[in-house]
Length: 70
Picture 1 (spheres, rainbow, N blue to C red):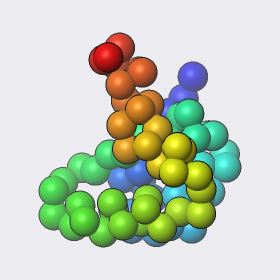
Picture 2 (picture 1 turned 180 degrees about the vertical axis):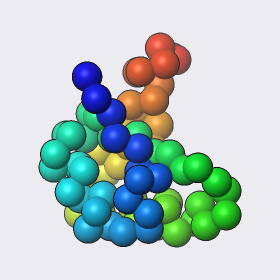
Picture 3 (picture 1 turned 30 degrees about the vertical axis):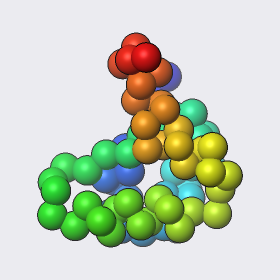
């Protein structure tokens, strides 16, 4: 029932991969605590060696599911 926020990993793709393997793709949400440097956070997720479907889940699918947004 826990979700991981990508803001906690900074701009580190290896740290994101660690969270991905620990929490699973269905429990990682794209997030940032400030807009400065958001492009680096987006790039870090895009550089993850995971299926595009999992990247979609991280960027928006998991949040939509968690927040009950169609």
